[in-house]
Length: 321
Ligand code: SAM
Ligand code: SF4
Image (cartoon, rainbow, N blue to C red; front, top):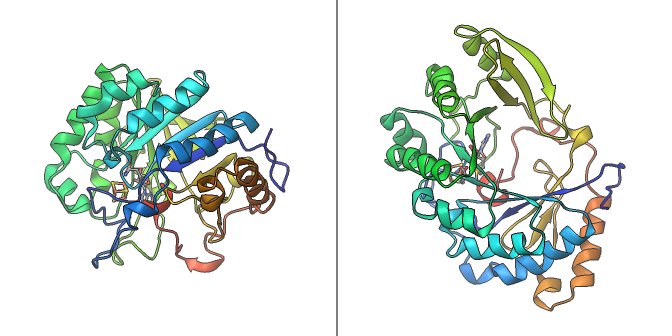
């Protein structure tokens, strides 16, 4: 079992398999041109898996693959299969923008993927264009259909932004509800890479929009999920992820691994340690020791709004959100 320095059990590993992305979401990517980490700096799937295997053997039972856009990494299904074949009952999930999903949903499902979260911020093509800076909506929605047809369980993530998509909070919920998918609204998290003029809605403001159309009651958190759940009178469950409160930190069970091999103990914490050299040299015991050290130093709560004002230096496209 993996226990951190504050006595919390850590059983959830999020792996960002690439920082590259085919979208340029305003809340995630910088406006000015920038260069990606060269591909040769990325750990191969075999190298990533050599670490994931140890982490699973030591107590990780939930793995999420994310990015950047994880479906840009070729043969992702082979990585999914490695993890699934090592421990078939592992809770194996993926977060994606959905653009390439229609082409690979079935392959991913056959490889052992169980669940997918798709980011859908709008149902209007021109707003999707404005947020992602590309004409994306049609392919994203096609991807969701393909994932459901393949038998994958799908959840929707939406980041509500003032004057951009706030009028669609309930419409996106209705879209998800009609397809039997849970929606989770994520409060926009200010960060130095995002476009400066953006303003997100608070959890309370999101609930105010929903209240105009639905009556609902509070349910609470489920296990160590960062989402706080609610249920409408007709029995539809939705969640809000509100990182501006620190109240989910006490049950935080997660750790993050980037494509280059950085182990990050907390999304809002700039320190990280690298397992890269250890993994490349096949020194798995060393990588395992680094994992334990990162866990010993995992902060008690996120530093949001403490020493960085309201902005984080972490790039969501590097850490996977
Ligand atoms: N590209 C994939 C996607 O968009 O789903 C996976 C990576 S993305 C970084 C993971 C999640 O982080 C997405 O649901 C996205 O909406 C969310 N995200 C990115 N930047 C954010 C921000 N500044 N505030 C809140 N959520 C953010
Ligand atoms: Fe890409 Fe996801 Fe970031 Fe949008 S949120 S730019 S899809 S990594």
